[in-house]
Length: 293
Image (cartoon, rainbow, N blue to C red; front, side, top):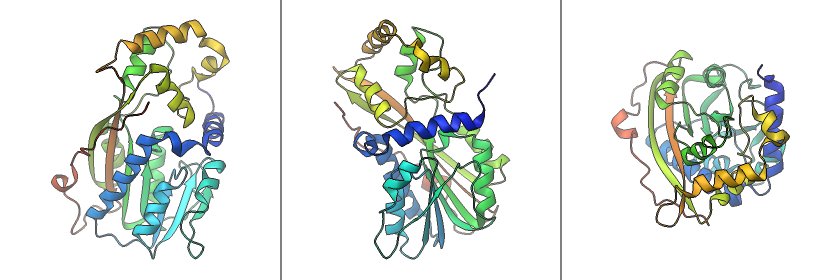
């Protein structure tokens, strides 16, 4: 029996509330992906009046959007009140974001009220079908959705190491890029364009990967086995075995943590002059992989 959505979301909220203050010090990759997503907006001619930063976290995307679109109204939405507390001072005293504490699956905004929905690395915590339907509902005609999320090969080394020890889901299952494109079309969004890049963080020790995930609240899962895991099924002996398996992944004396980052965009309407082309958009990040000790 699956846990109720409300209790599941409450657990996610508690995890991110607890990590909000220290989040940015450990979220190296998350901040890099957010910056990349902001840069991709330069490929559009959109001049939004109202922008929703869905899953704003500590507000790095909100700050970038405030700087990029100086006349737009910014709405920053997050499930975690403590994350929103970190976002409250973004911008200037003359222009602050409007904070919305809510679930992206039920956004408290009117139909056709937003020109741009920006969402960086939030979707993996949600039901894609519900969220895309909400994005489509609140977008104005010719409105744009720009997002990033994680793909199936994310944390593959950690997942494989746990698989050698037990049958529990210790790492989230992430949705394939092509399935996400299908979900966008199913929601009624048009001209979806998807691409992906593989990024790798490297560490001195395998345990440091888990410490980083815990520091940003990403050590929880959406799987219904999570309650059992939290009640003590991860014993010191079991963790030791996992780390031993992870050590076997060491490359050039470093421990890798792979992330498949998916980028996508889609429009509210089926026809749009001057739209982004697949050729223009599908470009790899091609950045130096950050090293984290």
